[in-house]
Structure formats: structure tokens, C-alpha cells
Amino acid sequence: MRHIIDQFVLIGTYQSHILYGSGHINETYLVTMTNPDAKYILQKINHRIFKKVPQLMSNYEKVTQYMKKHLPDGQVFIELLYTKDHQPFYTDDSGYYRMISYIENAIAYQTIPSETHMFLAGQAFGVFQNQLSNFDATSLYETIPFFHHTPKRFDNLVRAIQNASAERLHQATNWIEYALSFKPYANTIIDAIHFKQIPIRVTHNDTKMNNILFDDQKLEVKCIIDLDTIMPGSLLYDFGDAIRFGCNTALEDEKDTSKIQFNEAYFKAYTHGFLSAVQPFITTKEVEMLVDGAIMMTLETGIRFLTDYLENDIYFKTHYPEHNLIRTINQLTYLKKMCEIQIELRTIVQRLWREL
Ligand code: ADP
Ligand code: GN1
Ligand code: MG
Image (cartoon, rainbow, N blue to C red; front, side, top):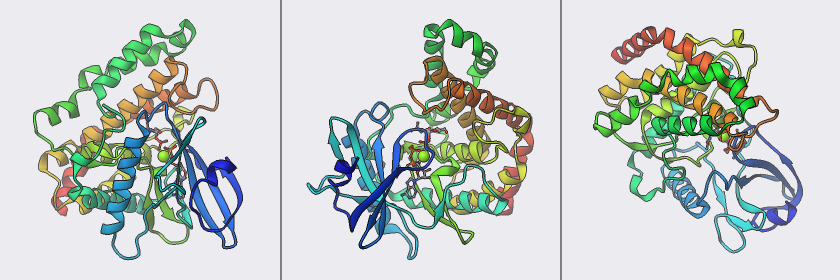
């Protein structure tokens, strides 16, 4: 790793590097320099998932440069560091690497500590959506084709079921059946896009709460991170994925399903923050479909974990053999809770929207 760090133009002398963060996709390291003191984030890009790294990094460069130009005073954003050959990433036989600025005095939560944090996160993702609204969507590559195409995610699940080992199929039987019972709803968002009921925008597409950094002292959002999936999409994906992660009272891989509840107060807070920021441009249909976004993103993530379990864990990082099955059970249990109260959730959205 030392040899790779040396390829980038950095301030100071190398001191150390350690594995960092808890993302499911890339290998992330905190690099510490001395004389003068400085910190950086080095990421080994997951090339099995991001097949076209030059295109991915072209998006990354465009978005970070655009944000730098449009940021209000005092707001920080990730900056890309270049190699000594002026490249936005380094590659050798071992893989693809990028170096980015380290966001100081910040914390990524795995569970959100308060309603205020949820409000601030909603506001921040809404503002981010607003900041990206003038970004030229046609200049972005699709880094993962059909990323939030839920029907295709179901096709992948069906294929995985056909090819799975007898043992994993057996372990997951009840959950496969439950997941497949949602297949008739898979087209909800894709159809709304297809029939032009909702617009395509530039979206983040991975708005779970550990992709937003909060200030570790003040009640403030510091920075939105994990820019790999910024590409054309629906605002419903960004709203939905944040609710999927943020309103679950348990961790995404909690084994004790009795701990999994839907936190309605957090839902209210996030929706309030988000709507107040996107109010100038969100359409009536998008408001009407926000809860569908939360349901679809939870369903989709549940079937992605299930597919990966049946495919012997080739996509998400896992820490033990049943990890993806536990995540599946967690998401589908949470999905059931969300569906049971969906009428209430829709009423909350409409009330907040009227009151804005
Ligand atoms: P992955 O795609 O694997 O989720 P992320 O870009 O989200 O990768 O990074 C993983 C974790 O590393 C984040 O959740 C966060 O805790 C930490 N991290 C990533 N980038 C930064 C940064 N620029 N400054 C501080 N922490 C970061
Ligand atoms: C992955 O990269 P990370 O850990 O922030 C995944 C998301 C899933 C999420 C589930 C590129 O997010 O789509 O919703 O795990 N990212 C990619 O926790 O597939
Ligand atoms: Mg991440």
C-alpha cells in the first residue's frame, strides 16, 4: 500500500495507514502524514462492481469540481488528489486506487442518534439534490447500469434461485417466498419514470446514513460522501434509501428481529427536512410517491442481499457466512413493518407538504 500512496501528490511525509470506515463496497484507508500533519482517504475501488473505472472517475472529477464551484462559504466537500502523473486515479496489477481529502472532525453514524440529526440529514440530501439540479446529466456515465431498476433486480434474484446451492436455498426458503410475493410491485417507480409521471434527475443513489458525515461537536452536517453512484435517477431513490436505513431502529445486520421497528418520529423529521429543501422544484407526483420510494428501496435492498446470499457472497462485503441472509431477514422484516403503516406515512407526508 505504501508504494501506492507514494504515487499521489500529498502534503507531508508518510506516517501510517489503517483500514477505515464500514462501507460494503470499496476498501477504504485512512492515510496519516506528518511534517506537516495531514490526513487523506485512500480507496481501492471495487473493480468487480465498477467495471469502467475511468468513466467512474470521470464522473467523480466532474461532480467534485462542480460542487467546489457551487458550494456556499464554509461548506466543505470531498476533493480529489491527483497522481504525480496528473491522473485522477492510480492503477497497477493489484487494482484501481483514488485519493481524496479527509473530512476532519466528522462522524458517520450507523444508527442515527436523534430526530434533529434526521431533520438535518433530510435537509442536507435535499440541498444536495438542489445543488445538482443544474448539473448536466448527459455528461455522466452510468457507473452501474440499472442500479435501481427493481424489476431487473428481481430477474437477478430468480436467476440466483435457479443456480443456488441446495444448502443456501434451504436456509432462505421462507424469505425467498416472501420476497417473491412483492414482485407485482417491482415496477412502481420504473413505470412512473417510463410514463413520464416523474422526472429523471441527477441523484446520489446511495443515501444511507453512513454516507453523510456529521460534525462531531456541533449539530451540523459536514459533508455528503460516497459519490460512486451519482448518475441520472429518481429523487424517490434518494429519499427512499435514507428512510430505509435511517428509520430502522436496528442496525442493518441486527439478528434479533424484535429490535427492528419503524421510527415514525424519525420519518417525520427526515421528511420535513427533505421537503423544506426540495420544495422549490419537487413535483406533486414525486411528493405523492415518496413513501413508495422508501418501500421500493427497502424491498430492492432486501432482494439484493438475498441474491448475494444465494450467489455465495460475491457483491457485498460479509463478515460471516450467514451475513447476507441476516441482512435479508432484517430488511424484509423492516419492509413488512413499513408496509403495515404506509397509510399513516402517506398522511404524514401530505400533512408536512401542506404545512410548508
Ligand atoms: P463504500 O462505497 O465502501 O461505502 P465510502 O466512500 O462510503 O465507501 O467510505 C466508507 C467509509 O469511510 C464511510 O462510511 C466513512 O466512514 C469513511 N469515509 C469515506 N470517505 C471519507 C472522507 N473523505 N473523510 C472521512 N471519512 C470518510
Ligand atoms: C452499499 O457502498 P455502501 O456501503 O455505502 C451499496 C448500496 C446498498 C448498501 C446497503 C455501490 O452501499 O447500494 O444500498 O450497500 N452500494 C453499491 O447497505 O452497491
Ligand atoms: Mg458508503
